[in-house]
Image (cartoon, rainbow, N blue to C red):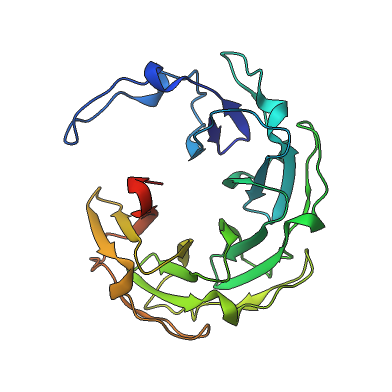
Length: 257
């Protein structure tokens, strides 16, 4: 399943995606999916069965969240369908597969985060717009959403290549819709937050900069610090570069995310 920034969902069989070597450029996604000029893929989720007891959890840059039964996406036409109704100035920033009893973390570009029970969000149909997940401060937007794991750390990465991980136990569970807690000391030196992931020591991460350069790091090599710190340099950036995306590589059972 593919979800775009405009809130649309598409579905493909894995064998419909052209196979290529590690160094190959691959096939432009617009040759596989009928995306509009302003659409870009925001999340990809592997699905085997559309179980009724599983859910798709959405988060938008304006702090809106929504939970919809996975079974509602079992019949997606080739042209896709609307997965969430977005306001004109909003877009999708995260999509996760959940079990209904998860905890959800949302992180903003100015270094705030909120963690709440998934059960605080009732299940809604595809045409629903969602509810408030976090109340954003002035000039702030949500940039990342992940499933919270108390046995993990929250890794936060800034646009100028700084990052840190903080034990999830330092984050208290709050009520949905609050302003959240400070999770990163954003400064002119660090730049804004561009991504966040819950990670374990055995995981690895990839950082991608605006020039298309990728580096791969072991999570265990990244220092653990408290919530209100700026962390350390993970990837050096020049004045005309910035980190644009992060990805987590799960080494358990050779599965990659």
